[in-house]
Length: 230
Image 1 (cartoon, rainbow, N blue to C red):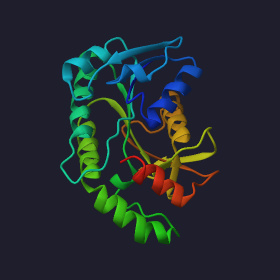
Image 2: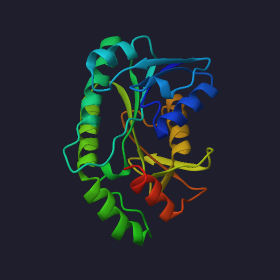
Image 3: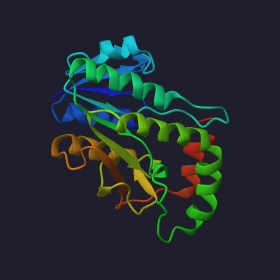
Image 4: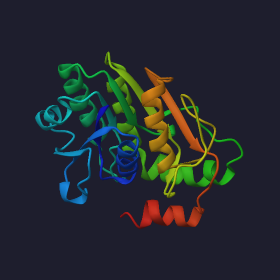
């Protein structure tokens, strides 16, 4: 299968690209920074801003499916990256007759998501990080989901919980809408997307995914995902 991966040089996109190539897929890595991608068999690089309709159209032409792992930093200002890229990507897919779309969203997009027994997360991290620092980001993720839901595409909204780095795919769990759990390794997120691409269990709905085999160090997670990235 020939797959366009948006955000291919990002933290999750890198896992997606590596795993897709290892599985034998042809990958069109869509990025604004082509120099960050190493040339490999089966990999084509498309230079595009995901919010630029013409560039997105050119990147998607000739593909069989689109996987989006786009992301941006927290900001107190209004964020439009997710919704604007969703409009550009879904229009290009419709124009080229490409039906299958999987895009990374967040468990935060489910208003009923509240991990069981996660007192520190529910009462400290979630209110401070997700609901305050990440408010404008998650507002735009919800707009992105709304844009995608209005299309006739075979879409899946992929909703991880707190993302962290782990070098290899582990045990993970998926469920419709969201999963009762706090953390998701990016390697597992990528693996779940590629598996869903083949199995098509969550077409035109949301798929929650959490890691069950390993847990991150909370202090290291806050440093790597919050402080260090600024």
